[in-house]
Image 1 (cartoon, rainbow, N blue to C red):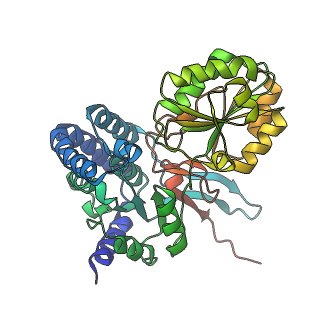
Image 2: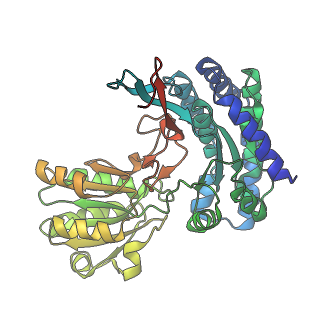
Length: 415
């Protein structure tokens, strides 16, 4: 048995135990993990510094380098997320929509874990903690395979998580890490359908394609975040500038960053110079269509490739549209079903945008950066699904479970 297969077999056995673990035991494990994470933060940050030094020497790009970095505020957020998960209501075992049939049989759906989750991801060591915490709360086990650039950070974090599980009397193999950075390990994981129940990739296009093309089990994923903000006729310009700057500038290298600004033609002459000035102060490069460039000549010309681009950088595509129908058509053609925003004062247009835009999160008068499990009150997320089966949007505890039918009878037979 290969090392990866053996890890998967042990994790699958742990998943069976986790499925019936008590909510109290899972909460104890999560609280212990939060405590240990903070107590051992110096060791974690030392491991992360080793990863950062190796990444810098290897020429890792700015966005990926940013995602790799851990610091005390990040660890505090992860600590708080684990505590929030520990204190959240128990989901597993809840029976929903119970009803009595004419023959007296009571039927409903019981929420149950998915089993063993395979998680393949890049750069983000914080995702190790978020994913493991969610999986434990949902009564699953997880087999992690992070990128080579975060190996030392992930080894330190997984050691803490496994110790917390053991402290709570739960199987430490419920959180396991494939320690080899070789791509062959990922390909082997993707073939282990007898052990791994669902695969969740989190990373760039190349990783997503690799997993979706080779996986022998269901896959939950998002391809990329080509996210739009539409500034509507009559909208508040101060709000529009603030949301655009926040969406583009705060963390440009993440999937919920803003990539394209659409502006109603009636608002463009006044709004575009204002938002362009605010973005220029943060070093944002604008690429506009001809109408936008007539108003702000300093913009670079946008090409057809810009409308479908996930820049993950301080670059923003800008287009002037004649009306809301044109904005909706643009989003339908180029959007990636991740996050879409309208800035508007009009109730009817806001409601129409919510109904007609197909994305995992559709927002009225709010930043696309809010498409995040922690921001939406889930405590954490294992990823943002842009597939619709079986989850759409940030995947928290509930999205890491499914339901089975249960029936309570008193001797009923089929006539």
